[in-house]
Each structure stands twice: as C-alpha cells, then as structure tokens.
Image (cartoon, rainbow, N blue to C red; front, side, top):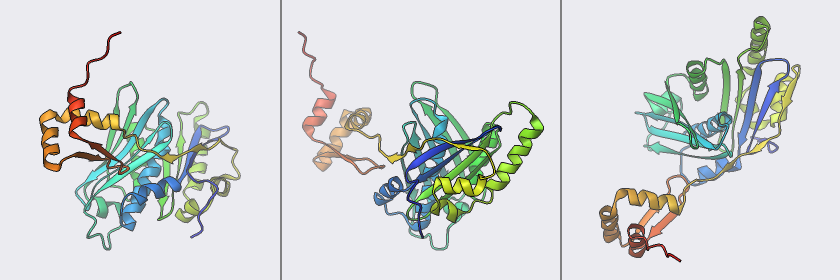
Length: 293
C-alpha cells in the first residue's frame, strides 16, 4: 500500500467558512510505529490500538490548557483493556492488555473486547478531572465516539478512524451551536456530513491531509490551519517511580529488594527501566537532613 508521506505525525484543524462546522484531521506514522515496536501485538490488535491513538489525538483539542485526555476501553473479551492518551502538547502513548493467543478469525470491536465500556477522561492540570462513559456496543470505535458526543455534548459529530500496520489516520467534523439561521445551519451540516461519509479507509491511509480534504470538500470554503506535530513521548520519570515506591511503603519495598537483590520498575508504556539499590531505597525513606546555612 502506498502511504501518504506528506502529513505524517501531525494534527490539523479546519473550519468551513460561513458555517458553524469545525473539523480536525490527524495522521500518526513514526509515533505509531515506535509504540508498536515496544510491543508484539497481533495485526488486528495493532490496528485497533492505532484507532485509539488517533481518537486521543483528535480529542486532544478539547484541552485548552496543559493536561491529558485518555480514551480507554475495558471489556471481558480477549482484549481486557486498551487505552491511549494525548497531552495538550500533542504527545501520545498507550497500551493494550489481554490474551492474544487465540485471536484467529476475530476482528470486530465486539469480538475483540466482548462486553465493554468506553471511557473518555479529561485531566486539565490543576483543575477538576472529568470522565464520560458509554457502552462500547456500536460496530466500530468511530460510531462509539459519535454516540459519546451525542450523549455528553449534544453536538452532532462525525468521526472516521483507520489504521493498518504502518500508519493510523482520523478525521472529525462537528456542528457547533448555531449562531444564526437554523435552517441554513442544518442544511450546511447535511451537505458536509454527506460528503464526509464518502471518505474511505484507503483514502485516509494513502492521501495527504490536503488531498483528503480537497477530494471531499473542494466545493466548500474551507480554511485549513497549520499542522501541529504529534510525537510518542512517555511521561514516566525516576521521580514519579520513586513516588510510587514510597506509596508502597518501606517494608514492602525492602521485601522486594531482599527477594531480588534489586528493585527494578519497568514502565509499561515505554519499557524504560528504573533500578533501585538498597542504598537508593534507604535514601528514599530516610532523606538526608537539609543543610542550613
């Protein structure tokens, strides 16, 4: 498959001038491949993971300040948990958990996740966390997200997500609260959403953002904004890991150290290892007195 190489790892907003409709388009390539390289997901799991990453990327525009948005599903199928998160700074990461040994012939959302729920969580830094939860019972993740917007914000929204072994792409259009003629607003939405529905998965994965939008909306007055770079970046750190150890308590950490000779914490998202010797542990629980001058 010929993949588009002109819109890799970026998110772009667009507006339809003279209407109350906005949109976003995103493609993840290098960042997606970096994440896949850390894990050994079967093909259908990797593609679903790509859709979740793209969904988090598209929804990240809802963060108006520093923070994180998480798109996560939990179910009773072979995939027990799948999550992707994106920061306001456009860093993505994610993970999938489950039993991947018997996935032959399974490909749909319901086959992979079973009975499941989808949670969208916004965590603006220094402000109250917000979470919306909907059942994961539509035919694909795109439709589940559309239902989420219908339930939580009552804003007509259309979403298309696509992924293969090399890249993941997504597009969203949304009707904002109308500012004038209601009939015109509804007519605009019907026109734009009908055109949007003609976008195919292969076009999303092969065409640049410009080409996708031109193919769909060349008769509309569309304003495309500058691309924002997307990248894989993990928020783990030694300091955060130390905090997690402190919360476990001294005795439990010393027991682990006695058993293994060393405490090794591996980040589940990026596989970074953090090693703690007995001396490190002692320093954690008995920090030196600050020097007073």
